Length: 356
Image (tube, rainbow, N blue to C red; front, top):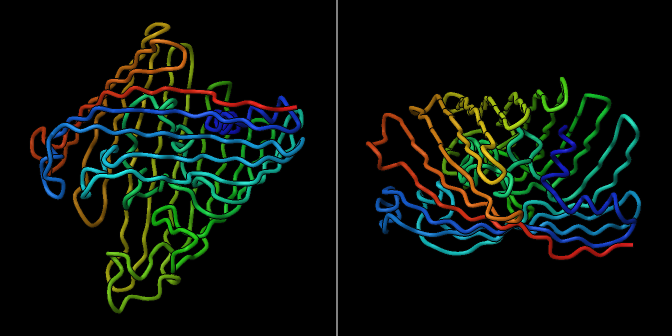
């Protein structure tokens, strides 16, 4: 089932089953109208209403019966995600989420896919549903994001092997930095990190899995790297988590629980645990409803909870109009000031398909 999700997340891989050599380009574009009183507070000090957009392109070059080059390239505005509310300024930036060369072999009851280059983290399961055309809600689980989250949405440089055998699926990955503090290949303080996971499909539509990662996570310019602390390479982070997906008829359910430990010598080890449950129900061929309930707790500060409610309407087979409202509740959150309302239009497209 995880291999099926990988193909869903990278639609261009379908070309591998149709042609020995070719090029395919698919993608999605989302535009959002956002309301939150948090936008009026520092550091933004702006108006409570803003707009944003996110575009993702999935190019695939089929190089033969087993080889292909795959990518996921994102262009987005800032602000667009909730975590952007706590940063200054406006702008547009591009992100390389994936750019890798892959080799694949498939058998009746098994498969192996090896990839090298820019990869999404192998830890957790939400990144397989990150695209707004797949994610039923405008927001993301609390442990995923760009700024100081447990699992980065951005690509990591390294290599990965995915395999399936009957109902089991496996993955192992070695990358240049931690999913909790991603470093580009041009940055200082890059240290190898291992990640991996295993899953078992109990029956069609019902899969359970577990994943983990370990490796140094700090760098010397990091805000929480203190004078006199041990060398970053001697301070590893360890994380482990479980996940489950279930789908039957009009229902789709997802859930994850994750635990993170970031080691220090001068101060106590930082720990964090977080989790969410997400449900989606199809109401009619054009309408669906969704919700996600999550929490986060840490050893350094009080945690909080998040409640997301949403609905989606499909005006046609290529577009989804989503309505979402997120409530955040915690000891430092005042009334409704941290709540967020979003209207998002997602357009999926298939631009080019050439093969022979």
